[in-house]
Length: 209
Ligand SMILES: [Zn+2]
Ligand SMILES: [Zn+2]
Image (cartoon, rainbow, N blue to C red; front, side):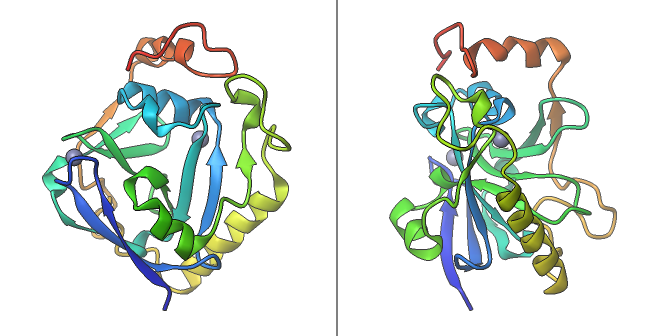
């Protein structure tokens, strides 16, 4: 049930599929947090952000995402030692999924990795925005912090995915060992700090990219 859509990095080397897509099986939100902004700037991909620094993200169950080609190009980045795992294709610096450890079964995918009209058809428009206080310039409406309804919705999805057995297989972690399948780099505190000038709420330097 639900739609199937192809994921591809910008250059086409890394490809995958996302299945079971519908407005009732995934969450789509625009995240304005400074970490998402910092990640895009670290990759030199400010083009992934909207004019206010927001990331258009679809949250899906781990088992619904699988890679079909170019897996050797996948690497992970953490902005701090316990931060999210932010996976990307290092051929062209395209994000291919944000995750926590597999005990919290979700993958947050940036919409630019998909054909947007196809994705819009499958899951509809974003249901809201979060962390608007970090937006570049005027915060978007009604999005300053954690939106409780969106949070409950996200938790509901997580429970549903777990109930349906969609925690495994996980596209980025080994089921046997729980370890990441791909190499992960952690930014130093200095490297993380250096990205703040590019991000909201008040960027003080033009983007590096
Ligand atoms: Zn690529
Ligand atoms: Zn974020």
